[in-house]
Image: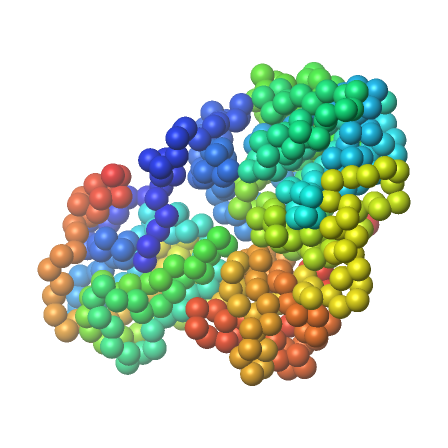
Length: 125
Length: 387
């Protein structure tokens, strides 16, 4: 699955949508979902929680392992995806769409996120 | 999040991982590969949960060519195995198989094995990939004084498995062998899809199924024939990931998890594989007799099943804790169970906490990365097929 051009990416394999009214959507990439295998449980930050770029804010359980979820940005959680909590398989089937994880009101613009092409190169290495 | 590298890191290993005779087949199917005990093996082809379900409801096709085969032949082949292993292999009839173990002199488990008796004077010992060299070395060491030969046949066989309720029907389409007459833990030579094979009714999934030992050069053709024969029944290729959740649900131990060099068969709840009544001495007898007495007097720890109340997964190495937070055991294997729809685990716990009980009754929990999660204690296995 190719990485959508309009998104930006962290080296921890999260994606970030363009902000609308200061709020951006976060998920994990198809590359990450493929590496995890079937995701069976996601633990997400609470609405209203403060998250910090590069710090853990949740976890993803798959058959083989548990992985920390990092926030790619600093801000406040405004919404979590209840559909993905109820059906974690959405992370595998639609990582860039229905499998989004949370929305965050941005405190500041992160400087070090990758473009789609840069992230594709990063994961090919 | 952190993700595992897409290819195994081989920089620290002296040799590149070995590949099986089906490597090109796996890659053509788009398998995610993993380094397992020095072998590059398919982890999954698509969704491991779908592969798991296929084995429970229809059938799955596995490449298990990493398993290590050792042939023991000669007039004293049975006596050698009686001495070297904990089972009574000379009493096994030709065409039958036994689940057994090889222990060191202290009674510690070196590996768990399946031994097939192919003829009066011929056995095949099947060891785990990670232990095959140690088992081979031990058999050669223990061979002294017996009129028997130990042959390294690891490269002589590829091993395919067809597992699941539809396995017998699928196999029957490509063989004239008498599958109805082939009982669980039996094996016979035969022809499958034109290929010479040892056909064994064994497996590691908790389902009916077969394991087919063939020449490596025949493996790809057999895989293709089985895939075609099983397509209408929903047979799918299956990787090691679902093999692990299938065996866990079936309560089957895995070496390195439930079985280790520091564990005797009695500690693992598998004392029944040790046959003290067999004639002659065997390696580990004295230590194992002591272990058997210990287990009878006061089992220090018991292997139990745990079923999580919540959705976080107890993983190998996590602490099992009592209501007051004291450590009462250790998880040896854990995974989200596709069949139960909840996380499950096998764990060694103090005898006082081993009886089946709800989480409320027992207060048993698992420390999952700092948070105590309630678990029900159950008798193994978690899953038993309807016969």
